[in-house]
Image (tube, rainbow, N blue to C red; front, side, top):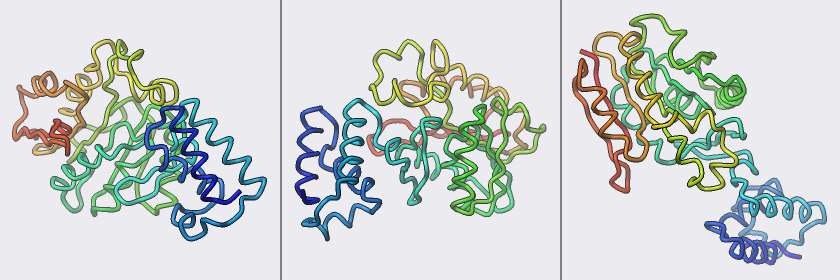
Length: 275
């Protein structure tokens, strides 16, 4: 069997299984089975598959058909132009979160202290460390997630200090210039309605905030007033329909409140400044 035939057969299987982007997924999984980049497939379409590669490819297709995200199968996800390693211990970085990066870069100053709360894979903290000359800290309540983040930072040579704590509990008063976070914001009542790839595979501690989905926002905004320096910035990624209630939490004691929208026109990032 050639690579081209394998792609066609894999695409057909994924189409029948109602998997999104079946052709792209088949190509990514075959390239992973080969230990190559996708571009290799196009230049070697007539190459014969070895039995070992075919076995691996078949297993990957089977896992994807069961709902396992492609990123957890390959262990990779691109974010802001860099390749990050991901495992089921961390959320898969989304392109939408790059809006949080852009909004943060506009507010970070050279030599400032940046804190990423809920580091996960480290995608946010590592990106900010490599794109700025700030000192970047990152916390997470999950030590398994921190292991993934630390490994990513080492591989990408990013100077980030990671530590385990609940939100900002370990941070000294008035020590941070910019606090960024993509917090858990899914209401627990939404669990049955989530895509199976999210519901059954991504870590619940990083997804669900509580009954309303606003619980972590409430705690984080209250705690941010303690750790931010005067004039410091708070930036959070927004969940579905969370703009108005989160914005209401900032009505007292915050200034320069701004909303950044994603490419679909949805409110994605909320920024506010401590006077």
